[in-house]
Image (cartoon, rainbow, N blue to C red; front, side):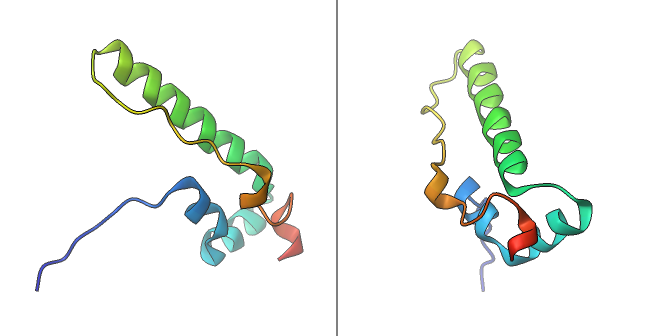
Length: 74
């Protein structure tokens, strides 16, 4: 049996119920967390691009990926 791991997309992270529970417990809104992830993706992309690596443009989520603006509405 071979174990494989794959990173979650930003949309998957934002829909994950356990992550939403942690955000709610920490008092972090879903939209603030989404912006944090998008900023990190942009920074990573620009850093890799400056190093000469050919990387695709990061995919940015739309509001439809978030079903609410905060985790309190879960």
